[in-house]
Length: 302
Ligand code: PBE
Image (tube, rainbow, N blue to C red; front, side):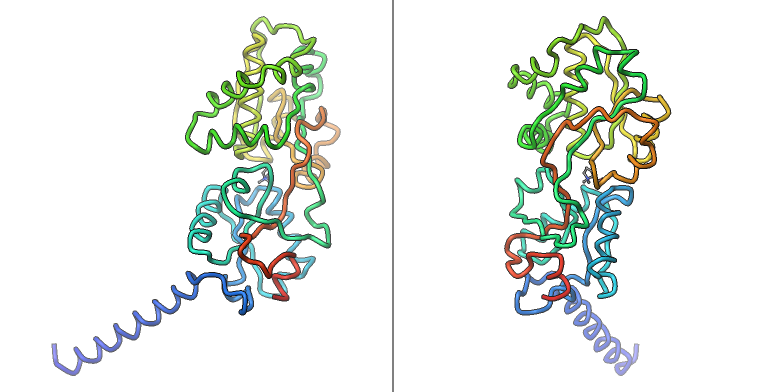
């Protein structure tokens, strides 16, 4: 190679490296409260799977606030990818905005806060409902009674979620929980006849919260001598499985807001058994060290 060409190439490489390094470092710098937030994170909200209700609600928030008009966008990924991005951001005190919900272990593991939602796009408080196929109450009144009596608190659900998050098999975590909470088991099964091997087919969406509740319900039913099976589906097929009688029940209906569109669509074809958990919440969340950012409106203003 000629000397001059070599010199040009070397300069070019150095220039390129410098550009790449600056680009990277601006994305990996700690949160700077004195600069506008948007450019620090490329105006991006880190989301989860496209089918989730929280993604539909966040699309509404993009319109309502109006974030989209101000360059903001929602990135689709998965719960696992979102929580690992969040873990990295928090490790280096970097800015990040995520789709967040409770109950979930992310709020126990990370210092997170929900952003205020003055336009009430995400609804104030959610419940997780149990839904059943029409006719289950008549065909299998025992299992139906247990499903109807199943109710627990966010902190009880978190107990199971934290175990599975630490690597315990969900079925084992469910068993541990039932062993530790004999009173709850008694309440849930009170007055219900034994199943004599009668089948109960549960479908669910594989969110950590529903992995927990569905496994607990299956173990409760099995201990009462029913034969429970569980099947994970995407949100749309999960609702359809109950509406078409392909499955008996699901504990995965976040209402009134998150899965509101599905309830509207299937209202006449399912039996809304009632809430199995009160005090759930859905919204946008940021690490607590982002002290300036407290409302969704701050994403534009600060
Ligand atoms: N979630 C968890 C679900 C419901 C359960 C909030 C991610 C959703 O957005 O549809």
